[in-house]
Length: 86
Image (cartoon, rainbow, N blue to C red; front, side):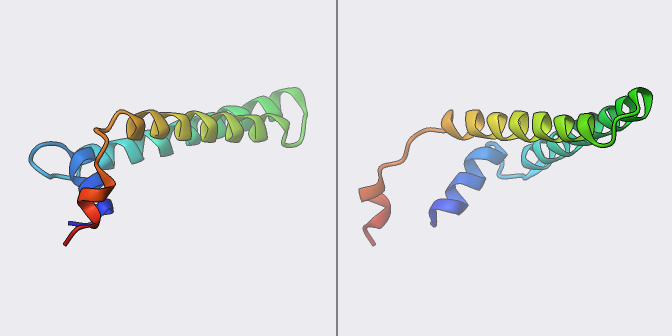
């Protein structure tokens, strides 16, 4: 089994369904969307051009990738020598 396939099985849960992967993707997209919308509202309110939208994008990307990093780092470590043997 390839390393990518093993990671998907580990992330998706015991039954191998991709529901948890999909929920993480939706959470990332919705968080980013809400922060961009909020930044757009603040830009309109304070008369700035794109300052708060850019701040919202950066906060959303940083938070989303940090969460992804924490999820992946919590996975059990695999032995690379075992994976390379036929």
